[in-house]
Length: 100
Image 1 (cartoon, helix red, strand yellow):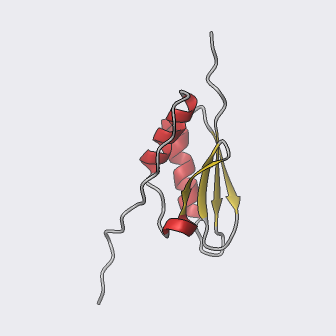
Image 2 (cartoon, rainbow, N blue to C red):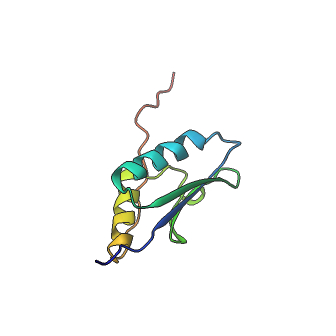
């Protein structure tokens, strides 16, 4: 029986910006959808929410100014496990903003 390759997901988040909740949400989502992946949340640079899969950057909040779509991250983890190429992760759209 062939084992799937080990996949690690490292999420660097800004503690000053209080992005820990988003990191834990993504970690929980990945643990449920791709149970074989090792997911770690690490405090990092100011403004960061960077997602790396096996040392490959798949999302950067520093570059995009948005959080990733969690389903896209999970699809990339599955692709990595299956030896397929990873795709660009889309950014979450903000829909609950209002100006008064």
